[in-house]
Length: 145
Ligand SMILES: Cc1cc2nc3c(=O)[nH]c(=O)nc-3n(C[C@H](O)[C@H](O)[C@H](O)COP(=O)(O)OP(=O)(O)OC[C@H]3O[C@@H](n4cnc5c(N)ncnc54)[C@H](O)[C@@H]3O)c2cc1C
Image 1: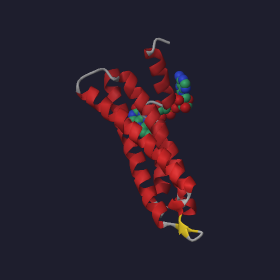
Image 2: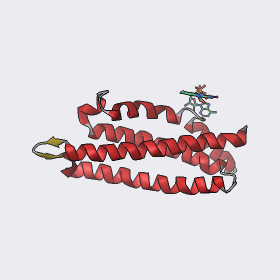
Image 3: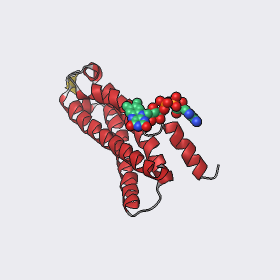
Image 4: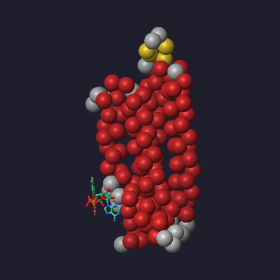
């Protein structure tokens, strides 16, 4: 049972990574199309910095996750790393949901815009499949603490 739980955590990490990538993609499209004060909001430096920060986190998350999937498929014990991926990638996805909603402005709060639902739904990712706090207790234990 404990061995199999690492697969559940891996699936949640993959879902969080994918959600972060989709939210970023949708937000890049949105900021290019929305105009305020006579120009596209993608031209504001704050928007560019936020997008750049999120793109960096998404790339780093993808690299870690790809390596983890390869190790898991190779039959290695990935309990510690999968616990790291589960808490960190769901944490990043929640932060990205918040930033993306902010960049959508008022529309981000409206059900008509997908980011509203994604913002709400991503919250559970740090709760189920073992809470993120429990992931950290596993990591600490496996580090000999
Ligand atoms: C949508 C959804 C689907 C689910 N699907 C399933 C499923 O298919 N199968 C299944 O078995 N379960 C499922 N769950 C249950 C889920 O795994 C639990 O909700 C989760 O493990 C947290 O348990 P709890 O809700 O009792 O919260 P609690 O254990 O009461 O935790 C509340 C808070 O206290 C913290 N906490 C608790 N213990 C510690 C500790 N020792 N150290 C530090 N912090 C601690 C938690 O991290 C959390 O922040 C699902 C939950 C949801 C919301």
